Length: 504
Image (cartoon, rainbow, N blue to C red; front, side, top):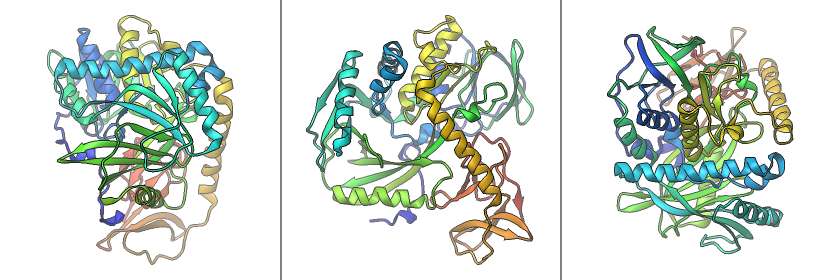
């Protein structure tokens, strides 16, 4: 079996599909809707809006479907942990019903598009389960099953699952699904260009002029004029009026793609308690992969990110006869104070700029919901799910404590990053990174396998927190708002728009 460090971090979804090659925007453009971000939200929204007869343009800073969409576990489910009883108790039955209806509708939207366009994307109907091995969660799971059924989800309580370890209780949702997200979305993307619609890659948006039409300014100069703008860039790159930096919290989680001797029983499983353990299967050549994920933590927190992969490997070996580990990857997700996404107007005062973000690890359905909701707002002026997804909503009972805790954490990391002493030992080993003191300055240093030294300024260019070394992905990660940079300072993940300063 391969050693974890010998496995190049790459998701199965990216490894099993061709890289795209859409053009870069070269000149000014006029469309009805410009969508910033080529992930699942952007591709789906463009598909639905073009169906309505609108001319759309997607502009993507890198290649489409390479970010969080390309690093998901790809569960198409309305089961987002133990959430419905919480929403009902904290926000009321109406909001809980809206959220349930929205995500159930998203499942059927995906299934309908796959059928309509005859897309080969490993789609299969499955049941989804939240299980517990702890007596503490048994009543919570029973409450979740009761509330979900009350909200017209096909949900049942059980104490028996076909897993290789005992459980105390579980809630089962029927009529859920799984698929290969890139196969699905690449097929949708192919139909977007033409008839006045476009996809542009390697085209980074850097600013928006709030006019009518709005003007999106790109890094290399060309502008896009559009009557409506959708910001679907994972984290909103344009945040001047919305204070999203204080309302979105970044987390990382990890995935192993495993070959096991035994056949996976089918279904999608996730634990109620932490550390999270999530399981599903995926067709792979003439065998199957078991996708084991979990180990979430705040971005830029903890001493060793590599330890999270090792914890998953330990769990796998305890419960399966593992023949090989073929893939490992990680992903970044954003959560909101009340745990529900933002999809709607960027702010209540800007009617033609929209946002979709904060999917809390459940992006397959929530990105589809966001695309449907934003289509309805643009075309009809309203959506039946608008209030529960409203970015301007005020939900003190559900969000106040998280808002305070998370923003205190940002302040602590900002201050501690400035005052903690840097290491003075400059004898870096191959594949080691750390913050060093060089001529009185803090310098981020990484020595690669060939012995070459990579030096950067560790101060994040977003809001000037100090980044921390990620030993699993060999990146510098910001603990405040989640920006990530390569060992040479290049942007891996926003919200930062500028790279770290590189030293020679």
